[in-house]
Image (tube, rainbow, N blue to C red; front, top):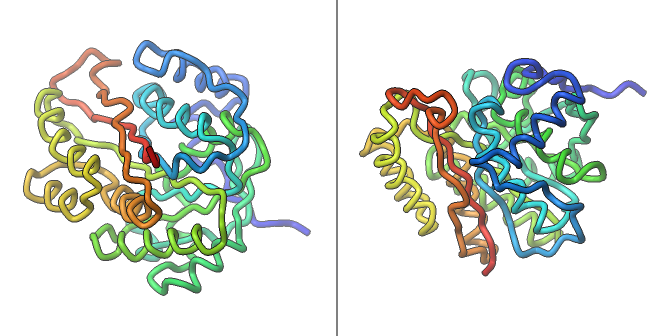
Length: 287
């Protein structure tokens, strides 16, 4: 039986399309001077000490070293059964909050199964969440996370991709509470990856000042405060919805210890600090 497969649309653009080159790029992200400085060890059993991370979604050359901090934290938390990946919808296509109808996601490292049992249960719990091919067809914010997951966990895990075009606090709360309820009631060994970049195309100094305000709200698990900061301070954060959803999940499940793992910007790579895109990795833990 032929299963529907989402191809690696952005392979060769956001990350290498050839397997060996991709593995090398991932290794370099972890060993980069701005990365964690070590490769993840083979993950042990799922500990439940961590519920999720915020990770950036730019090209690996610009943000992979920041994302590596998040994925090292996940590796140290042990191997999950399922990973919910929430990303912003850059193309404004498809349903406002969309699960993918494909059964498999393809990357140069191989195929990853979409957990349809969990996806269907999630859609049945919250009517704002619907299945939609279009929302995922061209989107990179979720796709770029999958090779990182494969690199640290290998095989034997599934994903639930969720594209968020609607990124209001209310939508994020509904998505977050539905996911949290499902994790809690089904006893899922799960992680949540909230895909987001920070300030876009401003001077590095200004990006850092603005992003500090947003990050402080995340550290205090203040979803509405994050949303208000983004609006009031004109912070061009690309993914407040996924981050707010993760905040609601963490609060519901008792993961109150939020740590900023790394903050950097594209100017750290290009040398041009006059107009940057900034990135942050954060981890949501019990203690």
